[in-house]
Amino acid sequence: MSITLSGQKMIADYGPTPLDRLMGRIVLDRTMEMLVTVYHSQVRRFVSSSGRARLAGVLVEQDGIYGALHTLSREGTLIHLDSGPDGKAQGLPVWGYDFPPGRVAIQTLQQPWMPAWVADLIDDKPVPFEETAAETTRGNFKPPLWRRSYLGRWHGLASADIRGGTVDVMAQWVRAPAKPTRMEEIGTLTLRYAANDPDLANTHEGRSDEAGLPITFQSRNRAIVFAKPWSNRERFLRAFAKGENATVQQLATVIGLWNFTDRKDWEIYVGGQRITAFPHRCTAGDRIVIRDGVSYLAVLPIAPTDLGRDAEIEIGPGRAGKAPPTDAMITPALTISMFNLRKPQPVPLAALDLAAITSRTYGAFVLELGDVDQHGSFEAFARHIAANTLNATWQADRNLLEVAYRSGNDLMEVSFSSTFGQPAEAHFAVTPGQQDKMMPVRRLNGQWPYLATGIDRDTTWAQQGTTGRLEKNGAVLTSEPGRKAYLICDPRSGGVIAYNPLPDPQAWSLATRDGARFTADGKVGLLRLEYRPWSGEVLIDHQSGGALAKRLAISGLQQPPRVIVNGARVDVAGSAPDFQVALS
Image (cartoon, rainbow, N blue to C red; front, side, top):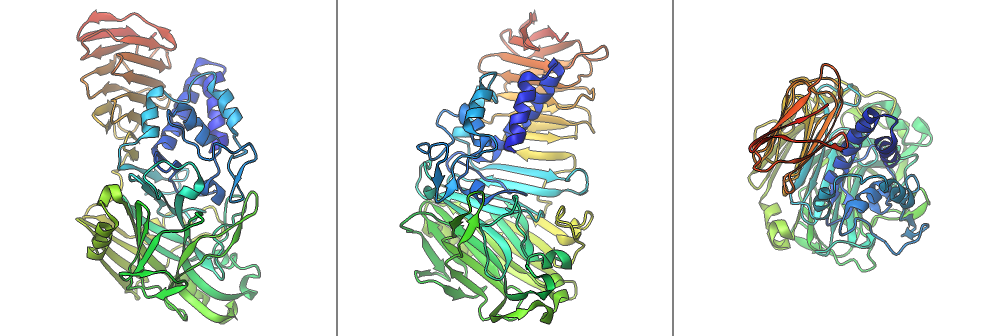
């Protein structure tokens, strides 16, 4: 992402033609909007799932994506500001090398990365702040896969429903009600389906060869997670150095809780009782609730498939692993392991029923986060979790786990299949077309929980789609159905950026929440219109041509706007409330 962002800025700043620069600007705007959306103002981290990532990048490493936001922020987006170029925290690099801070600074000189008014959303987002995005992976998945990020006041949760990446599910939070300055002030949750002694730190070129994958249904700050061995036998065996000739002692869904403070004062409760000695064993009926300062977590295990084990659930110290790029030895402070298999001694893989492992084996749990801002106190959060209901039924004849979780007034329902098509190569987690078989049911309060057909992304301040009508925070962008359109609107200031993001000509008009309306007298090509209601400024960059619109009508304003078209100020004709400007 950082290398891509730098390249996009180069095109936006120095593309050889105005059209090239406009294309670069639109692509850069979208990338920056995506980054601003998942950047947690109070945690100072990007709360997002990742297909390829190093754990260092999740925990502390700050590449150019952090630097670009830092140039816009008034309060700063970075931690460990006292660290030099080679600074490390817990042995991990503080600064990324793909797009270092110096290059970010140089690339900021030509023009800002985004308009200055975006700073408020970087520094102090209104919460909750959310993103839901469809993922077709270059058109291979129809219907699409889904990504979600949710930001509460002091915590965040993110997931990809079906990816098989390095970080499919993650959560981060702070312990004190203040912005962190060091990684030790931040808590992190990751998970993997792991064989033998689980290493939650290691990756190779941003990926990790694990024995399985999680499949996730997330709604806001809650997720139902199903984890299983790879369905494809070849992919499952890659987790073992000797393949089918290897031995196995353990198969488990493993949650890692990363806490780098010297004095860990979090509180862990199992079945309502505080636990202070580890390892601690429990059963799937025991709810695990954690207070880590002002942030709270709950893990509600679902009984995992029993392939032979001496414990169902165990909470204990994590195992140290080498984290690239420095190979620093880092350790999750605690792991929560939900075992399918755990033997006193390793057994040959060949002695096990691999067909049963790959097609009829699973682990599952519910994850819910909260904080003092949302619940008022940890005691209230604990009561909330205790009152929630969780029902899970394994349909053995269909290899299907059905789960219903009622949290407060919301009912999440989902079914997970343990048998589905999966390619041997690592590019896809599931064979395209099999994604609905993996999760045949997903409902929130009886309704489809994701986006309507034609909406590709929806966040608290942006929307992208092909429906012909986008709405966000009182702004409405009307275009042609079937054509791409893109809309950004700040929920506080009402600042708007509206686009025809592709050069395909289409009819186009914009209405804003303060009553302003912008209507082209014909079809527009590539176009970016930014409206600043507090100053009456309108900035338009567009593609001109013989068959494209020549004028833009601006109505609903009591004073003539200040309009800049393709970098030059233009005259505004008419009188309040109706004005016109020439586009060419």
